[in-house]
Amino acid sequence: QLQIVESGGDLVQPGRSLRLSCTTSGATLNHYAIGWFRQAPGKEREAISCISYKGDTTNWADSLQGRFTISRDNAKNAVYLQMNNLKPEDTAVYFCAADIAATCVSAIAARAGHHGMNYWGKGTLVTVSS
Figure (tube, rainbow, N blue to C red):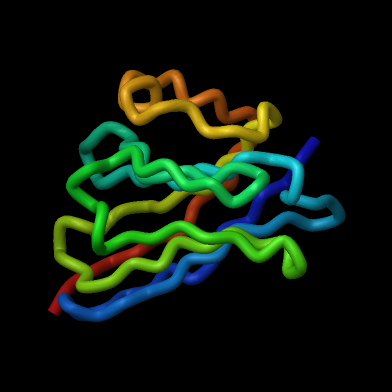
């Protein structure tokens, strides 16, 4: 069982940046594709982006491309989500998840809920407010 932990969530003002981290305890993420998701209050979970075990990225949310960037550092056993120019509508719980298939599904599949993720973290809260 892969235990995933997200961190980095915080209360920030609009226009600021945050970097979220995803890691595990006692295991490696290096063989998994990792996806980031978010769920705002009263809304459905939204797929943001994915990175394969090799580092290939797939953007799942066109509206966030250009502001949100996924990356990984296998030496640090971590996957990151860099979020720039944050807006109040980015307020949500952000989740990291791992796919044993090690590659990312298409944006169409992810948006339909067929993201293939097997293991989920408990999330980290990002609040964007002045």
